[in-house]
Image (cartoon, rainbow, N blue to C red; front, side):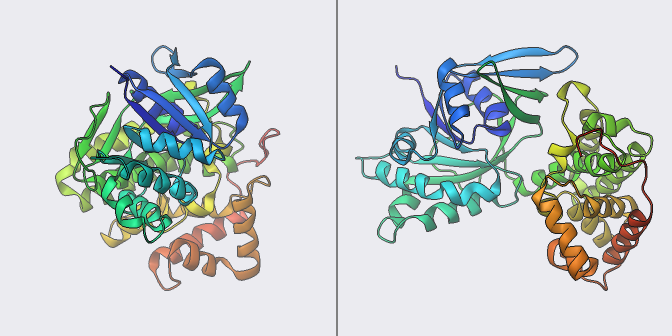
Length: 398
Protein backbone atom coordinates (compact mmCIF):
# COMPACT_ATOMS: atom_id res chain seq x y z
CA UNK A 1 0.00 0.00 0.00
CA UNK A 2 1.43 3.36 -1.00
CA UNK A 3 2.21 5.70 1.89
CA UNK A 4 0.27 8.92 2.28
CA UNK A 5 2.10 12.06 1.16
CA UNK A 6 2.00 15.58 2.57
CA UNK A 7 3.37 18.77 1.05
CA UNK A 8 4.74 21.31 3.55
CA UNK A 9 5.42 24.83 2.33
CA UNK A 10 8.33 26.14 4.38
CA UNK A 11 11.33 24.24 5.71
CA UNK A 12 11.93 26.49 8.69
CA UNK A 13 11.16 26.21 12.37
CA UNK A 14 7.44 25.48 11.92
CA UNK A 15 7.75 23.23 8.87
CA UNK A 16 10.67 21.15 10.12
CA UNK A 17 10.50 21.80 13.85
CA UNK A 18 6.93 20.60 14.12
CA UNK A 19 5.07 19.59 10.95
CA UNK A 20 7.70 17.27 9.54
CA UNK A 21 8.00 15.48 12.89
CA UNK A 22 4.22 14.99 13.20
CA UNK A 23 4.03 13.63 9.66
CA UNK A 24 6.98 11.30 10.25
CA UNK A 25 5.31 9.94 13.39
CA UNK A 26 2.13 9.43 11.31
CA UNK A 27 3.96 7.37 8.63
CA UNK A 28 3.73 10.05 5.95
CA UNK A 29 6.19 10.80 3.21
CA UNK A 30 6.83 14.53 3.36
CA UNK A 31 7.71 16.91 0.52
CA UNK A 32 9.08 20.23 1.77
CA UNK A 33 8.96 23.29 -0.48
CA UNK A 34 11.67 25.84 0.33
CA UNK A 35 13.29 28.92 -1.18
CA UNK A 36 16.93 28.17 -0.34
CA UNK A 37 18.85 25.64 -2.40
CA UNK A 38 21.16 24.75 0.50
CA UNK A 39 18.17 23.73 2.63
CA UNK A 40 16.66 21.67 -0.20
CA UNK A 41 20.01 19.98 -0.82
CA UNK A 42 20.54 19.20 2.87
CA UNK A 43 17.13 17.51 3.18
CA UNK A 44 17.49 15.58 -0.09
CA UNK A 45 21.04 14.46 0.58
CA UNK A 46 20.10 12.80 3.88
CA UNK A 47 16.40 12.11 3.39
CA UNK A 48 15.53 14.24 6.41
CA UNK A 49 17.02 16.36 9.19
CA UNK A 50 17.71 16.47 12.96
CA UNK A 51 15.85 17.90 15.96
CA UNK A 52 17.38 18.74 19.33
CA UNK A 53 14.48 18.29 21.77
CA UNK A 54 14.76 20.23 25.03
CA UNK A 55 13.44 18.77 28.27
CA UNK A 56 14.66 17.25 31.53
CA UNK A 57 17.16 15.47 29.28
CA UNK A 58 18.11 16.78 25.85
CA UNK A 59 17.38 14.29 23.05
CA UNK A 60 18.41 14.19 19.41
CA UNK A 61 15.78 12.92 16.97
CA UNK A 62 16.18 12.25 13.26
CA UNK A 63 13.17 12.99 11.04
CA UNK A 64 13.18 10.76 7.97
CA UNK A 65 11.11 10.01 4.85
CA UNK A 66 11.53 13.55 3.56
CA UNK A 67 12.46 15.17 0.29
CA UNK A 68 12.44 18.81 -0.78
CA UNK A 69 11.67 20.96 -3.81
CA UNK A 70 12.70 24.48 -4.64
CA UNK A 71 9.83 26.95 -4.58
CA UNK A 72 11.05 28.19 -7.96
CA UNK A 73 10.46 24.75 -9.52
CA UNK A 74 6.83 25.51 -10.30
CA UNK A 75 5.96 22.37 -12.36
CA UNK A 76 7.31 20.01 -9.69
CA UNK A 77 5.61 21.89 -6.84
CA UNK A 78 2.19 22.05 -8.51
CA UNK A 79 2.39 18.33 -9.38
CA UNK A 80 3.26 17.51 -5.76
CA UNK A 81 0.25 19.51 -4.55
CA UNK A 82 -2.05 17.81 -7.07
CA UNK A 83 -0.98 14.35 -5.86
CA UNK A 84 -0.83 15.10 -2.12
CA UNK A 85 -3.06 13.75 0.62
CA UNK A 86 -2.57 16.89 2.71
CA UNK A 87 -0.96 20.33 2.29
CA UNK A 88 0.35 22.35 5.23
CA UNK A 89 1.97 25.78 5.35
CA UNK A 90 4.48 26.94 7.94
CA UNK A 91 6.16 29.97 6.40
CA UNK A 92 4.50 33.01 7.97
CA UNK A 93 1.29 34.83 7.11
CA UNK A 94 3.07 37.40 4.96
CA UNK A 95 4.31 34.67 2.61
CA UNK A 96 0.98 32.97 1.89
CA UNK A 97 0.29 35.19 -1.11
CA UNK A 98 3.56 34.04 -2.73
CA UNK A 99 2.60 30.36 -2.66
CA UNK A 100 -1.11 30.83 -3.44
CA UNK A 101 -0.72 30.57 -7.26
CA UNK A 102 1.16 27.27 -6.90
CA UNK A 103 -1.46 25.78 -4.61
CA UNK A 104 -4.26 27.04 -6.86
CA UNK A 105 -2.61 25.45 -9.91
CA UNK A 106 -2.14 22.17 -8.04
CA UNK A 107 -5.77 22.13 -6.89
CA UNK A 108 -6.99 22.84 -10.41
CA UNK A 109 -4.89 19.98 -11.82
CA UNK A 110 -6.29 17.71 -9.12
CA UNK A 111 -9.86 18.80 -9.91
CA UNK A 112 -9.51 17.55 -13.49
CA UNK A 113 -9.27 13.93 -12.37
CA UNK A 114 -12.37 11.76 -12.23
CA UNK A 115 -13.98 11.82 -8.77
CA UNK A 116 -11.10 13.90 -7.41
CA UNK A 117 -10.98 13.75 -3.61
CA UNK A 118 -10.99 17.09 -1.77
CA UNK A 119 -7.56 18.24 -0.63
CA UNK A 120 -7.29 20.09 2.67
CA UNK A 121 -4.78 22.95 2.79
CA UNK A 122 -4.02 24.07 6.34
CA UNK A 123 -2.25 27.32 7.29
CA UNK A 124 -0.25 26.78 10.47
CA UNK A 125 0.01 30.47 11.32
CA UNK A 126 -0.66 32.69 14.36
CA UNK A 127 -3.61 34.52 12.86
CA UNK A 128 -7.31 34.55 13.81
CA UNK A 129 -9.25 33.65 10.69
CA UNK A 130 -6.18 32.16 9.03
CA UNK A 131 -8.24 29.55 7.17
CA UNK A 132 -10.51 32.15 5.57
CA UNK A 133 -7.49 34.28 4.68
CA UNK A 134 -5.77 31.28 3.08
CA UNK A 135 -8.90 30.43 1.06
CA UNK A 136 -9.14 34.02 -0.20
CA UNK A 137 -5.48 34.06 -1.26
CA UNK A 138 -5.66 30.73 -3.12
CA UNK A 139 -9.03 31.18 -4.83
CA UNK A 140 -8.09 34.74 -5.85
CA UNK A 141 -4.87 33.44 -7.37
CA UNK A 142 -6.80 31.17 -9.76
CA UNK A 143 -8.04 32.49 -13.10
CA UNK A 144 -11.76 33.22 -13.42
CA UNK A 145 -12.45 30.04 -15.37
CA UNK A 146 -10.67 27.89 -12.77
CA UNK A 147 -11.70 29.55 -9.51
CA UNK A 148 -14.86 27.50 -8.93
CA UNK A 149 -13.03 24.22 -9.55
CA UNK A 150 -10.27 25.22 -7.14
CA UNK A 151 -12.78 26.14 -4.45
CA UNK A 152 -14.74 22.90 -4.91
CA UNK A 153 -11.61 20.77 -4.71
CA UNK A 154 -9.94 22.49 -1.78
CA UNK A 155 -10.67 22.65 1.92
CA UNK A 156 -9.00 25.58 3.66
CA UNK A 157 -8.22 25.41 7.36
CA UNK A 158 -5.91 26.77 10.04
CA UNK A 159 -3.82 25.32 12.86
CA UNK A 160 -1.57 26.44 15.70
CA UNK A 161 0.89 25.01 18.19
CA UNK A 162 2.36 26.05 21.53
CA UNK A 163 5.61 24.26 20.81
CA UNK A 164 8.65 26.56 20.87
CA UNK A 165 10.96 26.11 17.89
CA UNK A 166 14.10 27.97 16.91
CA UNK A 167 15.51 28.58 13.46
CA UNK A 168 17.54 25.88 11.75
CA UNK A 169 21.19 25.70 10.87
CA UNK A 170 23.21 23.47 8.60
CA UNK A 171 25.99 21.54 10.32
CA UNK A 172 28.26 19.29 8.29
CA UNK A 173 25.70 19.29 5.50
CA UNK A 174 22.73 18.34 7.72
CA UNK A 175 19.83 20.54 8.82
CA UNK A 176 19.24 20.96 12.58
CA UNK A 177 16.45 22.59 14.62
CA UNK A 178 15.92 23.04 18.36
CA UNK A 179 12.45 22.47 19.84
CA UNK A 180 10.75 22.13 23.21
CA UNK A 181 7.68 20.27 24.38
CA UNK A 182 5.66 17.51 22.75
CA UNK A 183 4.82 17.79 19.05
CA UNK A 184 1.22 19.01 18.96
CA UNK A 185 -1.04 20.81 16.52
CA UNK A 186 -4.57 22.12 17.05
CA UNK A 187 -6.58 22.29 13.82
CA UNK A 188 -9.59 24.53 13.24
CA UNK A 189 -12.55 22.47 12.05
CA UNK A 190 -13.99 25.36 10.03
CA UNK A 191 -13.36 25.19 6.29
CA UNK A 192 -12.16 21.58 6.11
CA UNK A 193 -13.62 19.17 3.56
CA UNK A 194 -14.02 15.42 3.59
CA UNK A 195 -12.31 13.28 6.19
CA UNK A 196 -9.22 14.86 7.72
CA UNK A 197 -6.43 12.30 8.06
CA UNK A 198 -5.57 10.95 11.49
CA UNK A 199 -2.23 12.44 12.50
CA UNK A 200 -0.09 11.95 15.58
CA UNK A 201 -0.39 14.88 17.98
CA UNK A 202 -3.29 16.57 16.13
CA UNK A 203 -6.48 17.64 17.90
CA UNK A 204 -9.41 19.68 16.62
CA UNK A 205 -11.24 22.74 17.90
CA UNK A 206 -14.27 24.84 17.09
CA UNK A 207 -12.83 27.76 19.13
CA UNK A 208 -9.74 28.47 17.05
CA UNK A 209 -9.77 32.26 17.35
CA UNK A 210 -9.84 32.03 21.15
CA UNK A 211 -6.92 29.59 21.14
CA UNK A 212 -4.91 31.88 18.86
CA UNK A 213 -5.42 34.78 21.27
CA UNK A 214 -4.51 32.61 24.24
CA UNK A 215 -1.23 31.61 22.63
CA UNK A 216 -0.37 35.06 21.29
CA UNK A 217 -1.21 36.80 24.56
CA UNK A 218 0.70 34.38 26.80
CA UNK A 219 3.58 32.48 25.18
CA UNK A 220 4.30 34.87 22.30
CA UNK A 221 3.85 37.86 24.60
CA UNK A 222 6.30 36.40 27.15
CA UNK A 223 8.89 35.74 24.44
CA UNK A 224 8.56 39.23 22.95
CA UNK A 225 8.59 40.97 26.34
CA UNK A 226 11.75 39.13 27.36
CA UNK A 227 13.38 39.93 24.01
CA UNK A 228 12.63 43.67 23.83
CA UNK A 229 13.42 44.32 27.48
CA UNK A 230 16.37 41.94 27.38
CA UNK A 231 17.83 43.76 24.38
CA UNK A 232 17.92 46.94 26.41
CA UNK A 233 19.73 45.09 29.18
CA UNK A 234 22.39 43.51 26.98
CA UNK A 235 20.99 39.96 27.04
CA UNK A 236 21.95 37.73 24.14
CA UNK A 237 19.51 34.88 24.83
CA UNK A 238 15.83 34.90 25.76
CA UNK A 239 16.41 32.51 28.66
CA UNK A 240 18.95 34.96 30.11
CA UNK A 241 16.45 37.81 29.81
CA UNK A 242 13.75 35.68 31.43
CA UNK A 243 15.75 35.56 34.69
CA UNK A 244 17.43 38.99 34.50
CA UNK A 245 16.53 41.00 37.64
CA UNK A 246 15.63 44.09 35.57
CA UNK A 247 13.53 42.12 33.08
CA UNK A 248 11.88 39.11 34.74
CA UNK A 249 9.49 41.02 37.07
CA UNK A 250 8.10 43.06 34.18
CA UNK A 251 7.70 39.99 31.95
CA UNK A 252 5.83 38.14 34.69
CA UNK A 253 3.63 41.15 35.41
CA UNK A 254 2.83 41.74 31.72
CA UNK A 255 1.81 38.09 31.30
CA UNK A 256 -0.34 38.33 34.45
CA UNK A 257 -2.07 41.42 33.05
CA UNK A 258 -2.72 39.55 29.82
CA UNK A 259 -3.96 36.51 31.76
CA UNK A 260 -6.51 38.63 33.62
CA UNK A 261 -7.68 40.21 30.36
CA UNK A 262 -8.06 36.83 28.65
CA UNK A 263 -9.98 35.42 31.59
CA UNK A 264 -12.33 38.40 31.47
CA UNK A 265 -12.85 37.80 27.74
CA UNK A 266 -13.22 34.02 27.98
CA UNK A 267 -14.54 33.33 31.51
CA UNK A 268 -15.33 29.71 30.68
CA UNK A 269 -11.63 29.07 29.97
CA UNK A 270 -10.17 30.57 33.15
CA UNK A 271 -8.30 27.46 34.29
CA UNK A 272 -6.81 26.77 30.85
CA UNK A 273 -5.70 30.40 30.51
CA UNK A 274 -4.01 30.30 33.92
CA UNK A 275 -2.12 27.18 32.82
CA UNK A 276 -1.13 28.87 29.55
CA UNK A 277 0.31 31.86 31.42
CA UNK A 278 2.27 29.78 33.94
CA UNK A 279 3.60 27.53 31.20
CA UNK A 280 4.72 30.51 29.11
CA UNK A 281 6.90 31.90 31.91
CA UNK A 282 8.50 28.50 32.48
CA UNK A 283 9.08 27.72 28.80
CA UNK A 284 10.90 30.92 27.86
CA UNK A 285 13.38 30.35 30.69
CA UNK A 286 14.54 26.98 29.28
CA UNK A 287 18.25 27.42 28.44
CA UNK A 288 18.44 24.34 26.21
CA UNK A 289 16.62 26.16 23.39
CA UNK A 290 19.31 28.87 23.21
CA UNK A 291 16.82 31.15 21.46
CA UNK A 292 18.44 34.51 20.74
CA UNK A 293 16.98 37.87 21.68
CA UNK A 294 17.75 39.06 18.19
CA UNK A 295 15.69 36.31 16.52
CA UNK A 296 12.66 36.77 18.77
CA UNK A 297 12.77 40.57 18.57
CA UNK A 298 13.09 40.80 14.79
CA UNK A 299 10.34 42.34 12.71
CA UNK A 300 8.91 44.50 15.52
CA UNK A 301 6.60 46.35 13.16
CA UNK A 302 4.46 43.25 12.62
CA UNK A 303 4.48 42.39 16.31
CA UNK A 304 3.25 45.88 17.18
CA UNK A 305 0.03 45.61 15.15
CA UNK A 306 -3.27 46.10 16.96
CA UNK A 307 -4.15 42.38 17.12
CA UNK A 308 -0.67 41.01 17.79
CA UNK A 309 1.11 39.82 20.94
CA UNK A 310 1.92 43.23 22.46
CA UNK A 311 -0.84 45.71 21.67
CA UNK A 312 -3.54 43.03 21.47
CA UNK A 313 -3.51 42.03 25.17
CA UNK A 314 -3.08 45.65 26.27
CA UNK A 315 -6.16 46.68 24.30
CA UNK A 316 -8.07 43.73 25.71
CA UNK A 317 -7.11 44.71 29.27
CA UNK A 318 -8.08 48.34 28.65
CA UNK A 319 -11.43 47.28 27.21
CA UNK A 320 -12.20 45.29 30.36
CA UNK A 321 -11.02 48.11 32.64
CA UNK A 322 -8.06 46.06 33.90
CA UNK A 323 -4.46 47.13 34.66
CA UNK A 324 -2.06 47.25 31.72
CA UNK A 325 0.90 49.25 33.06
CA UNK A 326 3.55 46.64 32.28
CA UNK A 327 2.01 45.74 28.94
CA UNK A 328 2.37 49.45 28.09
CA UNK A 329 6.02 49.29 29.12
CA UNK A 330 6.66 46.26 26.88
CA UNK A 331 5.03 48.03 23.91
CA UNK A 332 7.24 51.04 24.60
CA UNK A 333 10.34 48.82 24.74
CA UNK A 334 9.45 47.36 21.33
CA UNK A 335 9.12 50.91 19.99
CA UNK A 336 12.71 51.62 21.12
CA UNK A 337 14.16 48.46 19.54
CA UNK A 338 16.89 49.66 17.21
CA UNK A 339 19.10 46.74 16.18
CA UNK A 340 21.00 48.02 13.11
CA UNK A 341 20.58 44.74 11.20
CA UNK A 342 16.78 44.69 11.52
CA UNK A 343 15.17 46.60 8.64
CA UNK A 344 11.81 46.88 10.39
CA UNK A 345 13.47 48.25 13.51
CA UNK A 346 15.29 50.86 11.43
CA UNK A 347 12.01 51.80 9.74
CA UNK A 348 10.31 52.29 13.09
CA UNK A 349 13.05 54.53 14.41
CA UNK A 350 13.06 56.54 11.17
CA UNK A 351 9.27 56.94 11.28
CA UNK A 352 9.29 58.06 14.90
CA UNK A 353 12.12 60.51 14.25
CA UNK A 354 10.44 62.11 11.22
CA UNK A 355 6.72 61.78 12.00
CA UNK A 356 6.53 61.46 15.77
CA UNK A 357 5.55 58.75 18.24
CA UNK A 358 1.82 59.56 18.09
CA UNK A 359 1.60 58.85 14.37
CA UNK A 360 3.51 55.62 14.85
CA UNK A 361 1.08 54.55 17.57
CA UNK A 362 -1.93 55.44 15.43
CA UNK A 363 -0.86 53.85 12.14
CA UNK A 364 1.05 50.77 13.28
CA UNK A 365 -0.52 50.03 16.66
CA UNK A 366 -4.06 51.25 16.01
CA UNK A 367 -3.92 53.47 19.12
CA UNK A 368 -5.38 56.95 18.65
CA UNK A 369 -3.79 59.84 20.59
CA UNK A 370 -6.82 60.46 22.83
CA UNK A 371 -6.99 56.84 24.05
CA UNK A 372 -5.70 56.28 27.60
CA UNK A 373 -3.67 53.30 26.39
CA UNK A 374 -1.94 55.42 23.74
CA UNK A 375 -1.09 58.03 26.38
CA UNK A 376 0.24 55.35 28.73
CA UNK A 377 2.48 53.84 26.04
CA UNK A 378 3.73 57.28 25.04
CA UNK A 379 4.64 58.08 28.65
CA UNK A 380 6.54 54.83 29.06
CA UNK A 381 8.30 55.39 25.73
CA UNK A 382 9.49 58.82 26.88
CA UNK A 383 10.76 57.25 30.12
CA UNK A 384 12.75 54.62 28.22
CA UNK A 385 14.17 57.17 25.81
CA UNK A 386 15.53 59.25 28.68
CA UNK A 387 16.95 56.41 30.76
CA UNK A 388 18.19 52.92 30.02
CA UNK A 389 17.37 49.98 32.27
CA UNK A 390 20.92 48.64 32.00
CA UNK A 391 24.02 49.22 29.81
CA UNK A 392 22.98 48.56 26.22
CA UNK A 393 25.99 46.75 24.75
CA UNK A 394 25.04 43.37 23.33
CA UNK A 395 28.50 41.86 23.48
CA UNK A 396 29.00 42.03 19.73
CA UNK A 397 25.46 40.97 18.79
CA UNK A 398 24.12 44.49 18.52
